[in-house]
Image (tube, rainbow, N blue to C red; front, side, top):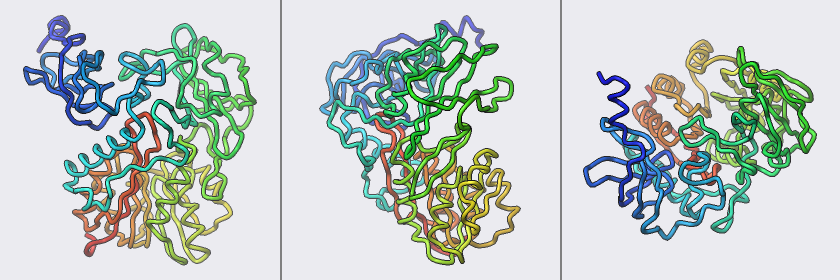
Amino acid sequence: MQNASESSLSSLVGQEYEVEIGPVAHGGHCVARTDDGRVLFVRHTLPGEKVVARVTDGDEDSRFLRADAVRIIEAAKDRVEAPCPFSGPGKCGGCDWQHVKPGAQRRFKGEVIAEQLLRLAGLTPEEAGWDGTVMPAPGDKLPPGEVPAWRTRVQYAIDAEGRAGLRKHRSHEVEPVDHCMIAAPGVSELGVEKRSWPQMASVEAIAATGSHDRQVILTPAPGGRLPLVELDKPVSVLRVDERDGGVHRVHGRAFVRERADGRTYRVGMGGFWQVHPEAADVLVKAVMQGLMPRKGETALDLYCGVGLFAGAIAERVGEDGAVLGIESSKRAVEDARHNLADLDRVRIEQGKVDQVLPRTRITETDLIVLDPPRAGAGKQTVRHLAGLGARRIAYVACDPAALARDLKYFAEAGYRSRTLRAFDLFPMTHHVECVAILEPTKKAV
């Protein structure tokens, strides 16, 4: 075993290689190989380019190295100058594709989805029911060099001098910023970047869609005291307790009101809601078009959050239908029950899906929608769901690798992807949202 000093001697951080860039890979980088056969995952570059890549992580024993393209020798036609002054090697890690034309960003995301489907699920795009395109969100069709201001929730890190900024890639180091270009106007109007935040570890700014609710969540540094908050707009303030991570109201509402599919949803204490202002409506529409709920049907909404899909399905199955939502977050369950209190055909249970679902003793259902965390649902949960005999299942995925793994499990259990749609709800980043609609191919096992 190497000791610390031996290990540091073999570090390759700072080493530079002149390389030709290969295909895009999942995670916001491209793949290259050095002359001696080392694999590099290179950020700030594009397929087909020739660059000088500087190693940012890895040593002699690493299976692969991470690197930044610090000099472009031969540029790709899809390259543009990054609009944001805080984007680039060694700077803010929030945006992966500021240097790429918007259409090419979506094309690269499509290539990643296709690669993950083939490698992890053994599916071609055609076999997954996908036409290979990644659709832009409404309002995001901008010319090259312009950035859509879409992010309605931004968590700023605070440096030792009290300046607001964003984390550098794979680092705790803070890049101070005076303006985040992808922040939605409602977030920018709060003026978080303009003031000092002494004794704070982070400041999260939220600008709700469909309401004028604004919220700031403060996380003090250990031993830090809350500042007197004077921002540019009326805002409610919450704080995170450093002892237990709980969120507590300081003043104003403890929640914000979001709007989607004709309903208003309360989202309390910094709970989860899609960050793109059009995302909730886009995803509900895709899920409902895929499931085509019928009057009187039963449905499950798993990982249901504050009840977005449960509410949409309940409206469509009518009074004779029934919807069960399952969510692990106690706060989100309270919000979901509040949000859907007018729909007595909806029941929300609190707990982990793989633990609560078996306890319900549900043996069959007509429809299922699941929107699992980034890790996916997993084989055990997929097999349980396949055994319920749903005529259609909607799988909402924020990670193409997790989606591909779970599609393989569904295929083994007798379900195939009938259609798959991909949406660019995170412009300038490598993230992409997918909606797969599954149907049985044989009797589920």
